Amino acid sequence: MINRWIPFLCLLALPSSTLSKKVLYDNWKLYRFYPCNAGEMSLLLDLHESNLNIIFLQDLNRHMMNMQEQFMSVDILLSPNYLMSDTFKTLKDKIESHVLAENVQKLIDEEAKHIVESGSSLNWDSYGSIGLINQFLGQMAAKYTHVDLLDMGVSAEKGIPLKVLKISSSDSHGKIWISGGLHGRDWISSAVVTYVINELLTSKDVDVNNISEFYDLYFLPVMNPDGYDYSQKTDRMWKKTRASTNSNIGCVGADANRNWDDDSKLDDTFPNPCNNTYPGDKGFSENEVVDASEFYMNHVANDTNMFLTVHGYNQLILLPYGRSGGRFKTEDAFDEWVGVAKKAARSMSGHLPRKVEKILLPHEQFRIGNISDIMGERHGSAVDWVTKQNSKIELALEIGLNNLSRGIFVPADQIKQKGIEFMKGLKELVIYFNGKTTTGDGDSPQCLPVEQTIKPSLYCFAGNK
Ligand SMILES: *[C@@H]1O[C@H](CO)[C@@H](O)[C@H](O)[C@H]1NC(C)=O
Ligand SMILES: *[C@@H]1O[C@H](CO)[C@@H](O)[C@H](O)[C@H]1NC(C)=O
Ligand SMILES: *[C@@H]1O[C@H](CO)[C@@H](O)[C@H](O)[C@H]1NC(C)=O
Ligand SMILES: *[C@@H]1O[C@H](CO)[C@@H](O)[C@H](O)[C@H]1NC(C)=O
Ligand SMILES: *[C@@H]1O[C@H](CO)[C@@H](O)[C@H](O)[C@H]1NC(C)=O
Image (cartoon, rainbow, N blue to C red; front, side, top):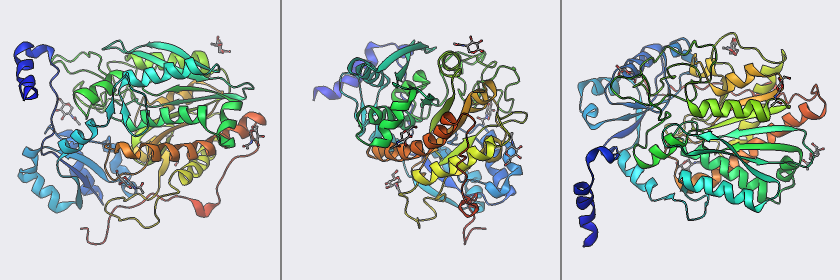
């Protein structure tokens, strides 16, 4: 009885400006489209560039028009208004599509039951709040003598501490950086990074122990804590940082994976601070990006190292570069990185059934390639910057975890599975890295036999127009 009155009293008691009102997605639908030629892709791009209160889960850009054979499925949240429009009817007639979720708010409400706040203990059946994740990192540092918690800085909006957990080896052959949560809404990436920390500290598996025995590891589970917190508390779809911008209508935040750039020629595809892929007012305008890049340079870059940035769903492994002009340490590096990425992808998707229902899981395997080939030209990503910066880097990958079936809404009961899969991939990556660190020059590129090549899939099915 009493409970019913609480929301009402709260509304009376607080002026609306101090409430951050929860963004609701009642009766929004999550659609997956399967564009199968340039014309269809173009329709989706038009929609992407219009301002209809439609939310794309992936970044689309015009460069994709040149890459027809790799068109991916495109996941979009559509508002009830748009769903009733004629434009939508036309779109639906023209492009094969499938509804992934009938009512997005229901998914969000379900997820919200599985968010655990600080004070409890972190587990991998639920999503931790940023407070709980930082608490977990502190507990690990207190418990293990070879674990330290290093301060990297604080987030721009809320001053949330940016904490890096370091696991020191007794006999370091090199350094491994693993970060998640660059985009606020990619909760699963942060959960997977904390899973890996826990595995490395507690596993009895000799391969896993070997990783922490021979490498110093640096973990940053939530690179964009303001965005993560805002996504959990206010707007599930929030992706950017939360810093103020030059917007005169108060739009905040930049895409923290387009802001790693010191030559000031930022991506001009989405110059408006209200866009989800806004790269920032200038390169390194975002606190969190500056702090992470400086930390990386000061603690990691001067030794032989490997840099992994974990993202939410999308089932892809991206290599540098997103823009032309980038160099690799050696001529063979790109091909070697593709080779080891394929191995990791194979281990990570090993449990996926061979025949899956096409409509639900069009990509049975990971797509692998440089950012430019897979996503179209994109500037200012973390992997581009670290690869360009230092000559000691032996591998830099952006890993989008698998299982596309529910978009970014990975149910909490899938976290462990994602963690297990990622660990399998990590083992492959470490084998490659190990070859680089023990022989100096590396005489063991992990190239796959040709028949293993994972072809980009086409998403045009029988019955599609
Ligand atoms: C970018 O922002 C501008 C201005 O608000 C808007 O017109 C445009 O539709 C936005 N594009 C995307 C992809 O959000
Ligand atoms: C552990 O690492 C060492 C050195 O990198 C390697 O020689 C050894 O084969 C590894 N052992 C296992 C079980 O992976
Ligand atoms: C890393 O190496 C560079 C070049 O040798 C040097 O200038 C810099 O001081 C080193 N940084 C650290 C943190 O050791
Ligand atoms: C991406 O890789 C392709 C080869 O697949 C290469 O031709 C192209 O130059 C690369 N682009 C960038 C920006 O590195
Ligand atoms: C994919 O994810 C869905 C829920 O998001 C889950 O029910 C399903 O078991 C997963 N499939 C695989 C093969 O992991």
